[in-house]
Length: 209
Image 1 (tube, rainbow, N blue to C red):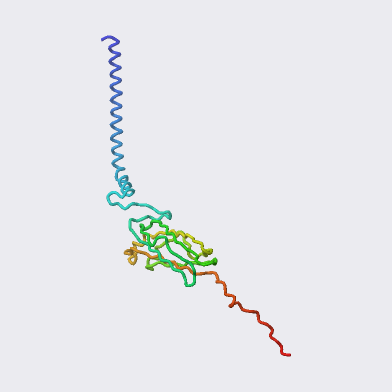
Image 2 (cartoon, helix red, strand yellow; image 1 turned 135 degrees about the vertical axis):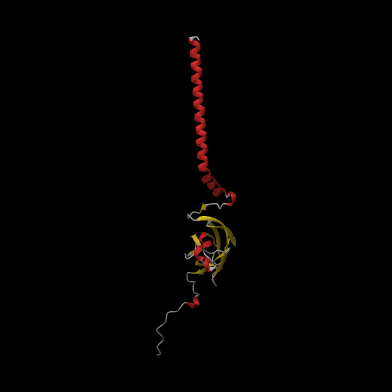
């Protein structure tokens, strides 16, 4: 065999060995990848189900307060009242909202002053059933603060809230499907007295001559 043939044979042999090494490395990488996927598939599948709800898995979300949102509907109804003599029209933009437990909702309330005077009012609230009151959380609310409304003025007042999912863990509240949030506005400034009601200064009285 000539020197040139030997050189060519060694070159082919070296290339073949290099190709074998590449194939072996690819096989090892493939096997390692498959093993990694096998270990990761269960947690990845669980995450996929929680995000998409696939397979009936409850989706895990949190609201802005860090409370987990549960796939359980609750309806919140809104009731509005004004005390006698308060010349306001007070009403919610919508009478009810249905949302998930833990989900943050916003309800807007409107107030209109139908008098010719500026009036200050304050709202109180209550939640029924009373057993659900401790699970109803208000993030923003206009209650217990002075609300000043000018003559003919119309104001929009938001209430931001959520219902705590822990309500499902209590025997007395786990079957509640509807909660009513009720507001009542009272006048807090003193109405102007009519002139006839203003006390006149007492005179010293007339002395007979």
